[in-house]
Image (cartoon, rainbow, N blue to C red):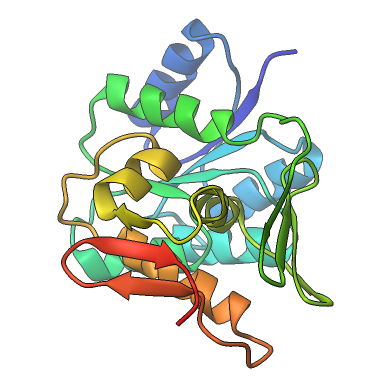
Length: 225
């Protein structure tokens, strides 16, 4: 079955370009021109991936992303933005986007990122990974710390899985970025730090000790303090 991609953007030139290019790449494509229309489209036909512009009529992309995540939509979201400033990019990630791409973008790069995001959702053989009281089920993507269940976004889960497959090892920033995002952000993005912060907040929500340690000048490690 073809993967279904929803493009939410009010620029007709971009939506026409993406519709043709994504269809040529083997995807089924639906488009929406406003934030409200995009939310309805998700309900009418749940997509496998959403390409979401920030500057939209009625509801901006940040609000659309926030409402989708609050409503339980788990599909990866690739946010398009003409804003290159770090605070705007971080805001997109904080509202639940999995990735972002700054306009104008190269079509080949967008297609590569779409492929990488869709690859994240593929079913894997079940493994139970354990680190102390932290348990991760790779088939169901359920995570527990002791008796407490922890709900993670797709990106948070993938980042934690990398750590749990390499316990106590110091993992460089480049290794973590490549493992989770599948390509190089160029080293000037703090997207990794944002998601490390998300993971720490959720893993420590019950007052537990910190497990993801910062190794200054190198990266991070999953280990006891």
